[in-house]
Length: 251
Image (tube, rainbow, N blue to C red; front, side, top):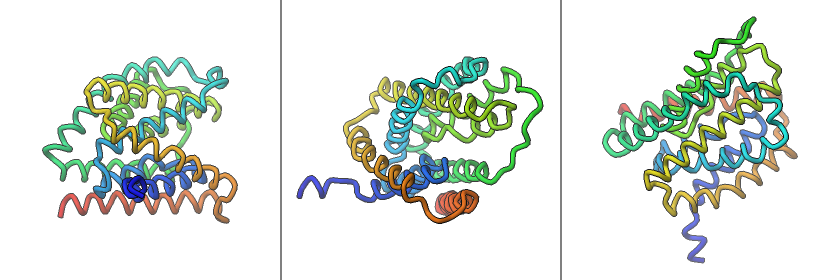
């Protein structure tokens, strides 16, 4: 009974909800978990970001084997080179904001979530030619910073890669690899800072099976709605979360 009382049930409920939505829409797990659990004070933002990174890393490690030949390698080195230092900057910024500027942190998190939500409904115009190497470094740096700050690295890289004239399978696997780099570097840096504590590991251990079950349910029992409708629902949810964080932070 004492063990059950120590289980972070509300966090696990949010993780299950986010995992289910991620499965049926392909987007949103990190932002939903961070917005609800971290932004609303259910768990410390620093801990939630670390848990999201560990979960993302595990997902990427499972998804990548046998698919590396689909990666668009010419872009990886430049994106990864920018990701590494920007992640460190993001983690250090999070540590500063969480201890001395919580209002700014809430507002910034709200803005990031709204920005990510906009990508759900944004119709991207595909470029005629693959972008230059410098642009992959730029968007890699932006993603690394957001990944370090809140564990939400996806939006900038997703936006940039899906505008490239590349096969979808190459885009998906390149993104998975870069998210693995982002999560791995962030996790190693957090460990080097002495911040990977028992609470983070315990929260991750509880969240893994919950998200796995939610993923299985999403695959076998998706809601009777079109993909576009689901994307709109997630968009509305993320906008609501982001706006509420901004309002709470300001007022």
